[in-house]
Image (tube, protein in one colour):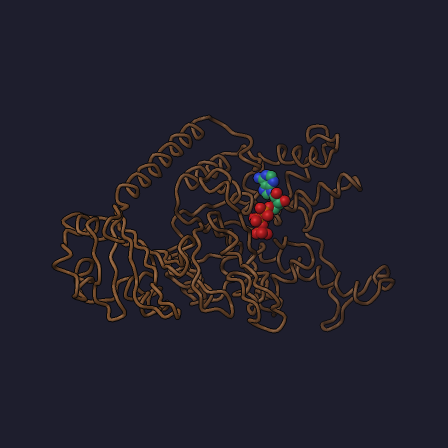
Length: 476
Ligand SMILES: Nc1ncnc2c1ncn2[C@@H]1O[C@H](COP(=O)(O)OP(=O)(O)OP(=O)(O)O)[C@@H](O)[C@H]1O
């Protein structure tokens, strides 16, 4: 049956000896049936050293070895031919030329369902691969040209949903455009509330991955115990309460962009597993040994210096180098105050308010300009929301223009309570007090979380959770 098909095929038995080798296979490999049938030399055609080829692994049903041997080449169970396994391999010298060969190996069964051998189909997909890569290059070039055009458009007031006309934001737009045109990993640096997620979304929305999902993950908000479950998913019965299979971020993001906010909060073991997945080694859902593959791009964000974290042993250097291909620094709002009016008008319009920056009372404009915005654009948004409702400017920290208000210090160990606080239930009063303490520690450390956590005598992760609980940062 194999003999007359124009598709290259050969068959082996359970003794691994070649039983059939058709004409098309002779043409493709340059090896005649006469030379190979009856031998178990099929590996010699592909590899310099003896090793099982796909057909041998199918005969043995050795799935683990199949994954190990073809691990980085997206091996898979065929979705078209039942029980068949498929993989593509590159050979520098295959019948005299460099070639990409696609293999599909299916087991052959007898009437009792026992495996009696395997049939392999081979296809030279070199031309298709070259064309695909040329198309990819062409579209990258087009994207690059589009990017250059965009960046030469002069001053921009808005880019995707990012508002800002300052020189510093123009520079950020240029890097976003370059990052979108490339496939490399990106790390976005910036204080809390500067718009890191917005920038990550803009990269995704202007990249070739824009039609696939964008999945934001707040690494600091997921407890250590749940990390693997959230990233890799689980199978039914993996643990008590796992009533059905659940996909994780990596499966859901297929083809798209995974935004790892607070990437410095990922545990070292999770960094290893993610690195393996990005580099094509796959990942396994909790409770399963099956290896899955996903094609995705990582855009990470951090407000810590990741290199310092590497030096302290809290961040893996291999993961750092994998992420740190395109760094983007978003400047704090206090360093681009020329954007304040534009941002204010944007937020007013979003709130359907008829207010405009230019017609605000002079004293309020002055306060907005003089304030140092430790919570950045998020704080501006919140301050304006309260302004529209209560008509008063209420900052999280003290404005720079006001002299620091020195409160009389209570004797150590005793906490003063205002009259209004004595009327609050204990839990509310305690929460309010905690928020004040956290804010004042953050302000004293210019919102450097590690220093603030140290001052407060709590871990960085605990501080992070408390900031989220008090609405000082957002949980994704
Ligand atoms: N340039 C901007 N234009 C319009 N909106 C902005 C801009 N920058 C930030 N924002 C808004 O401010 C809020 C905070 O932004 P975002 O969540 O992207 O900040 P972040 O840097 O990721 O913060 P965190 O580090 O706390 O997660 C969002 O509501 C976002 O839409």
